Length: 230
Image (tube, rainbow, N blue to C red; front, top):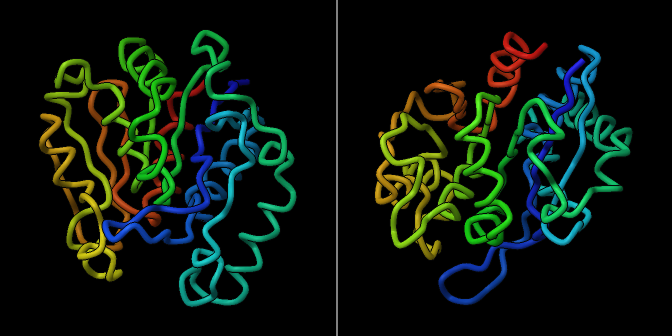
């Protein structure tokens, strides 16, 4: 069976443009839906985070009104509690692409704080993109692509990509307070940004790169990966 590397944010907050810290982390569904799909299929998951930090879940993502109801929220909590990998992450600097069959980056606003400028994330992403191994990122996780820039140029330039849109960021009320918006920065990176309806599952596949627009896209992204994993 396959061995997958999940790269999660190590930050429990996101610094806004006025300097205040917005409590965040990874978005629950973006971890739990793929984690459940992969582990139930018999695949192995390893979690990595900057400096080996234990990832923090964004508590907003566990609210029933955000999770799709009280029962769905309880299911998210159950998976997070049972996922021992979350409590013993490896250091991102120690992650070697050759040890894994695929790489997956869940989102949440946390990557907007750390992964977007993390050199180890940039190294891993650059290597994964150049390989034939599936590389998947969802929602705000494509912010990590910004870490691949060398003298302003990224290997992701020209790829078709989707991610959390400006419209969705405005809808949650955080766009006016953000230092920068993900859709804008990805376009500056040179990707071909594509999008579907707000809050609806939308995925994009370009060569070995798999991206999802929002939390609802995480499960769909996992199903696409399952089709190519051995």
